[in-house]
Length: 449
Image (tube, rainbow, N blue to C red; front, side, top):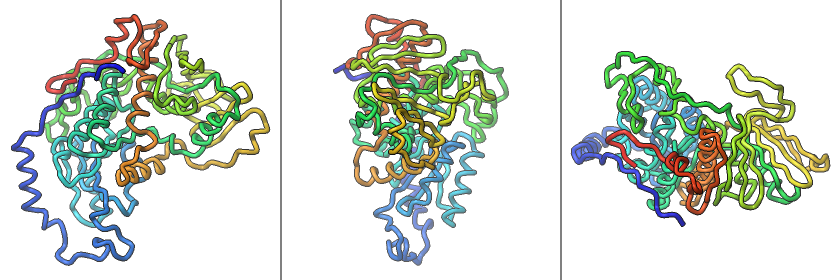
């Protein structure tokens, strides 16, 4: 096994801040609850007693975070108690929505995630910040004793994904990556069919990805807003400093910029589709051993001989050319399609639930699937169940580790424009110092790996 990767260190929560929070809770906690306790609070009348309820906080709840949170809030065994965002309008918007839902004013907004994580009454966090913060926020949360549901990609580099997985293992926290297609029925069906042997011996797996690209430019500097309105320094977090521009923050146009994004946009879809290919190939504990770029496609190969093709083209019914978003259009199975091919047949499916199979004899096993691939309902419920049971969820830290490392390795091969050999045991490239240096990035002070 490889030596343990460098650990991620972050500024500790100061004693003054922690003491202030505890003192505040002690002084005001009674005011947050009515003098007459309703029966449902005690667990009667179909309610869930506080002792059995999961308390959840949110960090960086934007459009995707709201979609995920919306599937959690109806759960009777969950209470959302705190939200954190570097933008005042975002944190106040979430607080207002939560307070309206519960009919009180108990949801506490924070600007600094360290203040939220210092709360002793918080069980778990939903992390849906920009990509640059996913690994660091997850690690800080685990060290603070919180379970984590993190949107993907969970780390900007191979090194961050290693440190994240190691931290979750060491702290014993429950971790669910936001690769929800593991809990979407049509993708489950396709993976199980591939693993059943009914396609014969698997030989090729196809994972759809975005059109690859990387931007190293900076947008022009604009005046920074007041810190309490937008905390630009905290928004950047571990990323290198650059001048403020509202397009990054307010308009959320940070994707594709190297400092804020991961893997030449490969992980935007690849974190989902490569994950499903890993699952179909029974490769959750390993990665491919070779990666070779070919234009906008990357060809990879596992030690068992199975090929993995990361491609933006080539799906059933797919027209040539780009769609309005500048990415290649997909075919009859919808966005994020995957295709598993064996000696005796193949299966393809995507986000709209449609399934294409060959031979026709396999059609007898098909049924209608209505859940969209972007729907996290089953995934978030599994996370909450695992918070209680302490079981490993479907997209646990080890599954995340190997899928993300495979994606990052493919992205590095594409960025370097050459074939690379990779050793899954050491999680390093064989005989290529330049590629190995790209497994990590320097982080801005005071954040460190």
